[in-house]
Picture 1: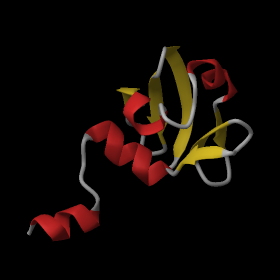
Picture 2 (picture 1 turned 45 degrees about the vertical axis):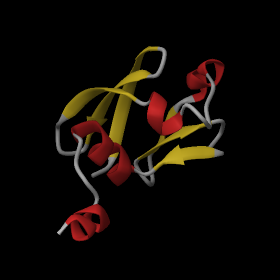
Picture 3 (picture 1 turned 30 degrees about the horizontal axis):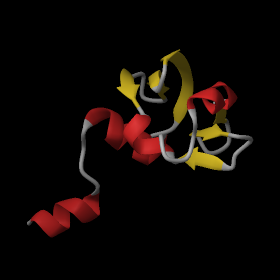
Length: 84
């Protein structure tokens, strides 16, 4: 599920827009706060080829599948397998 665009709201809050037409307001601090400072959030961009959210000219990126699962609180398939 590729990310097609985003809107930075405040602090680590973003609105994420996915290729399937869904959008979600998400606090990304627990996902990227260790790697991206508040001052670096302005470097955010979508990698149009991969559909991921990048920071610091691609030095930090979040793959779209991870963003989607994080936004919607879904477990990865490996987490599902371990829980079963």
